[in-house]
Length: 311
Image (cartoon, rainbow, N blue to C red; front, side):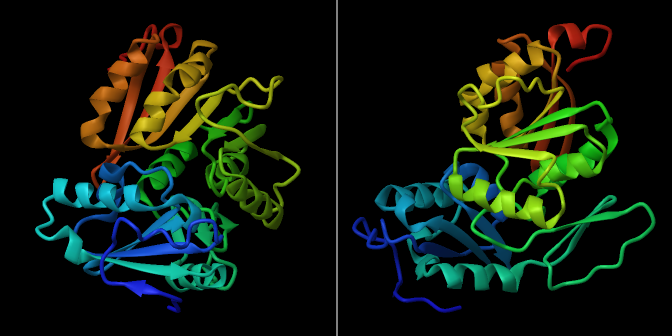
């Protein structure tokens, strides 16, 4: 890994890369689970995370981190029981090409049910019935390796129908929307607040031959989406706890109109809070799946819930 500057510990003034367009890699010496750390950190600016033995690599755009970032990371590590948070953190400033080289080194092909996700330079044999998506690491996190994404990819393989119109909120690399299309969904729209993510997702859709079926646009989970004529039947939201809370009213309107919600990005202990918030809008959890301390939920509006056991 190449780095232009390096400090042993973060300081309140360590924001020299802001506005440069470069990236920050933060190495945390710990045996904690990367997903659990992300869940407690609850920082939507984190663009990626990767775990190696006794080390978690976290990535921020250079113009979206500063003293508040390091304070939040210290608090999260302390909350998770790390004995010496300050001594565990190392900051590296990366140029764009170093970011891509780092991801290229780390990302391996992955099989999730019938779905293979791989970088273009690594082959993986397909079994009967399987299909692949080619996703080369770029500046948008979403290679399918995290438990929150895997839960939804597995779930999609059981619920997608040919009549489904899929809305992927916080689409990132667009991987969930592309999986839904490959599984036979009629149409998919992906939105993300980050224009860089949308640009990357468009590239991925083109590489995988889905650019004529996947509509991608800049938008956020809290507001009205930029597709007035699109009425989704299935809404995917792999977001963090706070964003799921903030966007609850918008997502629940889709459920009230008959759409199913598949929600992910939650630690198991955060489930009750989300259930209560969505129930206040007349939307109820119908099913749940868990993995590695994370949980995904299926939620539907009250009318869709009638006749079923919603818990």
